[in-house]
Length: 377
Image (cartoon, rainbow, N blue to C red):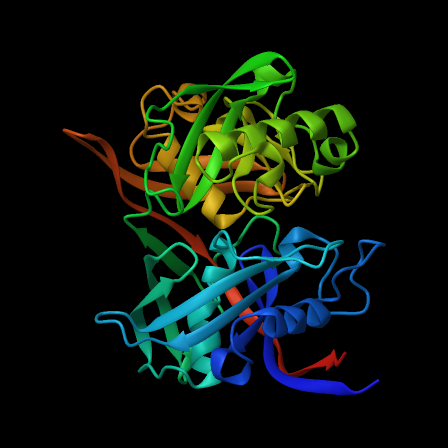
């Protein structure tokens, strides 16, 4: 079997990992490019492990990013994110990845797509999936992104240099509206029953439901949730109903794989992380479990954290009700791996609420740079 060798960098960004490519090293957009990505990651894999590729058998480890220099005024870089299904031959471009967004500028510096002087630097990147800009602040040392620092990310061992991601005007990333249903709270019907939900599109489309309405606590572990067929069926049904209500699909069965994501939300309560650490109730403002690509995320997708933070600022939303003790623009979110902090600035305008910005801190670093071997058909 002939192998095609393609320049790539394996990056960690936040709690995700993925293959990063310069666009100039790839074939044009289309089936050939998508096929290259799938083979590089090891999809489709009927065993769900992606052993014949760089993927890791989890949605957070089955991702690609394509980066190019930008000709847009005021923008330095553009990138496209792709979420590879594990068992199916699908690359889903319907959403963005907030965690891997943190690795875009570090990759571009190492790949020669951009040059920056040492020091604290700000770069504007444009995500093509959502057609939204992100302001990235990071430390540059020796012409590359610094990796040494004191910031700890729940779910990632050790510490690293902080990278601030500020999503500008994040509302309507896919649907064109911060509140696609027209209100902070709506009703979704599944299996003959109505469920209260908040449909929020900020950085990514989200279906937000209260844990108590589902007979859950939101403190369940990812393994517990993934092993419960009743919960999985219910959450998938609500996610698909939300996709239709948000205008992302005409019918539930046509809902995209990557969006909307669905999150189960509860007010502050004691919980245990996946590394067996105890989280006291006063450690967070809200407890959240997110389902991504059919799996419970072991932390929280970066864009989901931003959407939850925005939702907390929307009066009447499921999150605002659960996080009633939160103060100011900062929200502390308890996840299976620990507490993630996100900030949202939401203004009330005559036509309704408007998300000015949403931000969070991540760390990122390259794990491998070289060539990925892709079997040719």
